[in-house]
Image (cartoon, rainbow, N blue to C red):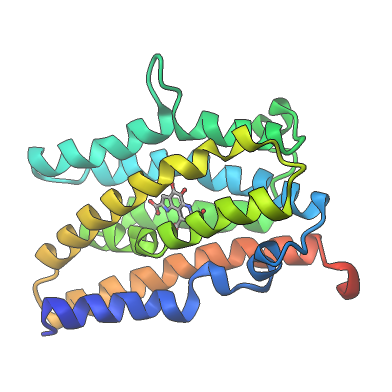
Length: 231
Ligand SMILES: O=C(O)c1cc(C(=O)O)c2c(n1)C(=O)C(=O)c1cc(C(=O)O)[nH]c1-2
């Protein structure tokens, strides 16, 4: 069995190899090379991911056996769905869309969602529905890699895509403190629950699978919205 330190290193290596920041579409985003249509397509398609996150978190929540763990996990659903007076991440993402010129109805009615994006996101939800909860939690650990990417993204949007109104970036600002908290909790559950090498390998595979979900989303966008020299 791997020590906690070795296991954590292996999980982090998955992100170094295949997190979505390495995908050409994402690289182009961070180089300021996406056209408005390409960036709008990313925002509208990522919305399908965002709206499904609390559904998958409710599936995980329903399987957590202890009250203490449920108490912590439930915060993820509240962060996304919001509450009276604090609207939450889904609303913030809709406002990101509006700040980038996408009317609210066009986000809500899913007209811009590509078939392969739908299949990839649905696969993530179904994975969490069907797998044992520690493995589902392991698949959420891409959040270990998200904060540094999201903090770069805020600066990039401000500098390279000034046509997006700055109030649209509130979603990303909120994630800067939510994601590290979620990742710490998720990692502590995975370290606690993986009791032999087999469990550990399953957790690592779950994280690879999740990276593939995020990768597939960007593959779909690349095909539907190729860059200038790829057409
Ligand atoms: O913008 C990003 O790059 C990014 C990545 C990820 C991720 O790594 O899955 C999440 C988010 N954002 C995010 O906003 C979010 O709420 C979230 C929840 C989860 C999850 O799997 O539970 N990942 C992510």
